[in-house]
Structure formats: structure tokens, C-alpha cells
Image (cartoon, one colour):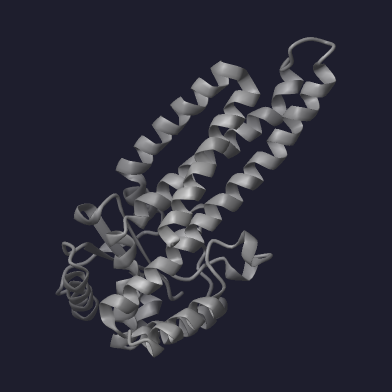
Length: 283
């Protein structure tokens, strides 16, 4: 069901990009939107993992550098049935983790120093299973592409807001109507794109939580980890870029959210409730 919802949201996001391009510039605008989407998705597919790892100063480690984390990631990757990913440490006391990479053969998992200080082995394994669930389900690529398309729509919206001031209109008679249309596109399109992107992210988080439960059969360990991470990340926040907040297991920007509608992650209470339900069913 989560997969169907994600696919539907992706269709909506893509149609929004094409519609905004067409409304701004007709067939030419539509062509520009398609070119933008192609170029940005190409960059996202090949380089998004390197960009985000560099953004958070993540350092690659070997087994001798951190035997505990390396051992747990190896065990969980075997459970997931995917190749051992590259393992990174983010030098931050804020507890969090994320996975990246375009496919299971080119994946990486990154954990902050802070997450290993507060989680026991079962909890850490459950978190790593969540992240590798993203990898196995190719959520890392899905999220990167969704963010890229939403970014393209936002950029087109920015263009639309300024077009009327630079002669963007068919003629003098239509100038007023065109101005209002461009203004509405410029304001509403980025907001709508952001909401759809966040909805996609929330669906993928539910899927990764379930994948962790299925792999480890320790749903309550992940529930316990999420409680700790949610509490501690408020106390020791991570200075994260909002464009990458959706990648982390708990939202590093939680304290800045206005409502669940504008959050990249589902409500923590709902995630924990689902995990407790999985535990009652034997996971």
C-alpha cells in the first residue's frame, strides 16, 4: 500500500512540474521543465550521495576504526540480503543516522557519534536495519529524485514570480491577468511541491520501519531507539540542511516543524504505535 501511495504521489509531483512549466511558458516552458528535470535527476542519481556525505563531513571507516558499528552493519546487510554498504561516521554528538546511494550495490550508511552513545546493540541494529531497508527498497533514490523534482518546481515558481516584472505577458490587455497567474504559480507551486515531497518521505519512513521489524524481528527495539533519538535530538540538535532532513531516521528539524503536514517524517507516536502492533503480530 505504501508503494502504491508513493507511486501516485510521484505521478502528481511530475505532473505538477510539467503543468507549471507549461503555464509559465507554453510548449517552450514545458520543454524547459523537462530539460531541468533530466539534468537535475542525472546529477542526483550520480552525485547526491557524495554531496550529502560531504555536507555532513562524514568520514569512511573500516572495521578496525569502529568494530561495533561495522559488525552490526555487516550482520544487518546479510539479513537484508544486500551487499555490505560503505560505513561512515558523522562527527556530531546529536544522535541520528541516514542511508544514501543510488542502489544496493552503491550504498552507504552514516551514523553520528552521538547515536552510538545512547543505543544498545539491539537498538542500533534495528536502526541500521531501518536504514538498509531504505537501501533495499531504493528509497534513497526515490527520495533524491522527489527532492530534485520539487526543487525544479520551486525554481520555476521563483521564475514565475519575477516574470511579470520583466515583460512576462502576452500583451498589455492580458498583463493584469498574467501577473496574477504568475504570482499564484510562484506562491502556490513551491508549497504544493513541498507538501507532496514530504508526503512521499513520510510513506517511505513507514516502509523502512516495517522492513526493520521484518529483518530483525525486534520491533520493540526500534520503538525504543526512536523514543531515545526523538528525545535526545531535541536536547542536542543537529544543524542539518532542510533539503536533506528527510534522509535521517528522526527529523533533525523536529523542533521547527509547524505541523505533521509540513514534516518530512510521520508523527513519532504513530511510528511507535505501528511498531508495537508489529511486535504483537510476532515481528
